[in-house]
Length: 78
Image 1 (cartoon, rainbow, N blue to C red):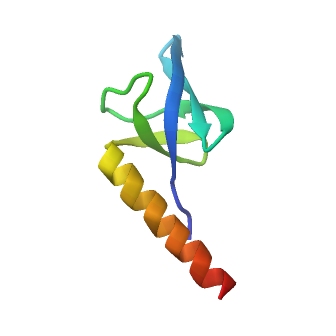
Image 2 (cartoon, helix red, strand yellow):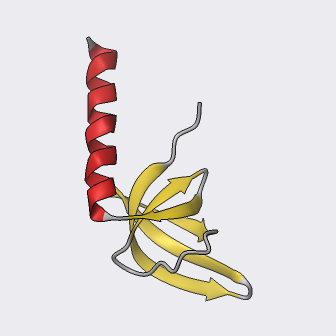
């Protein structure tokens, strides 16, 4: 099973036809490819899978996703 990871865009740029973004993954930054038709920009929250932005999410969706991840990690340690 593969999971997308929530991240915040901190920088965005383009090179030719490809759009890139630097994202904050909970304190770790990574450069990724933006591959969504949704308009995303600095400050937006997104889901990153395998180094690619696949969708934009709202802050409410971010909070719910982080809550679910926390619940899953607690279940694994029980």
